[in-house]
Length: 464
Image 1 (cartoon, helix red, strand yellow):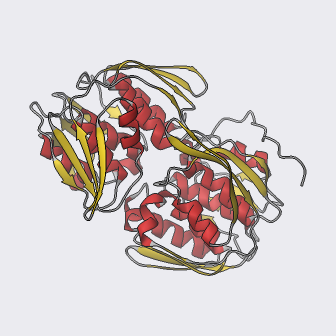
Image 2 (tube, one colour):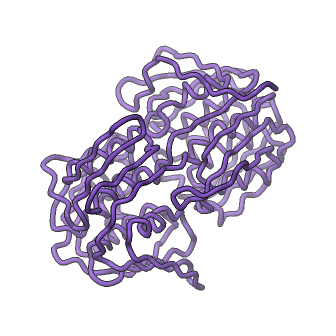
Image 3 (cartoon, rainbow, N blue to C red):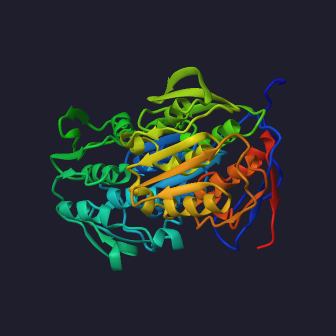
């Protein structure tokens, strides 16, 4: 193989998560080679904007993900009174209003498809004596919010929404918030983060107990902004204690590249014959890196190069090469929280491994942007892969390298990760795979098509 080169970016308009459906077909690729610069981490991008808005002074953010989800959070922070501006690609400035300084927005806050954004913002405003109404796209309006509003009610906030706790929803912040001690009923970084953000404007100590560890970006970033946060490992799990009413100090943040976005070029390289792809500057926070650990256990030729730390987060360059000898494994259920968004693309890799890959403890996938277990099971079966499923598990029986028949048209169900996963499947299957709507990809990875085509992928736009 020759020297790695960066993919060229085309002049086409990026995919949009709104408007008419954008059917897209992935053809079988000969090889994927080059350097894949994936966007900034979505989780850290959301939190950078929110904590910047809750600080006093200017926070500067470099490498911000400019997908629709994060842009919705930026607009929401403006509605709450922060001055949020973009100077150039990926470089943003947030002049915050301080803890408890949010203004009451004059209009409804539209969070688009951003489940993380809306839940974190609800937490951030729930202990300020203001009211705000939230809505989103069809997918977000179908997702449960009671898991957030229940703990926020313990602070004194009130929520009024549609049946089953769905958006549109109005949150009335607590006039006299009280600190809470809350045990997560299910592993959820979104719930944990919402409670901690609410605790910022409550007196005393707010405590969150998580029986299973989830991504810890919020704890790390709160410390970086000057909040007093302690974490203790106990027999009941991780006990996170936040001292309320701090004056947050603005920061300069370099956002690492998103491991959830990196998963797509990495996994595609593992299953497309002849591939060798380098994905630089990927965040390898141990609460986010479960997919890469799982892939290596399956026998993937995936290596970490130049490991280092940036902005308090572990980072490395990932090199992924075609891996024809991967075997199915049983993924430890306790690993689910560290890779919950990556199970769809893992199931694609499992389709090209030998034997069965079993994934347990993943019921959270039922309430993501779509029912991801059902969406992937239906689509994979349509493409000729054997899939079994239960309420909180699923199993994919692989057919080996190059063995997936393909030739399917699958439904993305307004879910960006489902769409990208099946497009990666089409790159390695015998026959093309068509996704009925690639538009939602813009919510998290607006340059996905350009980036993958730069590596050697072949896509065809179809008529809706």
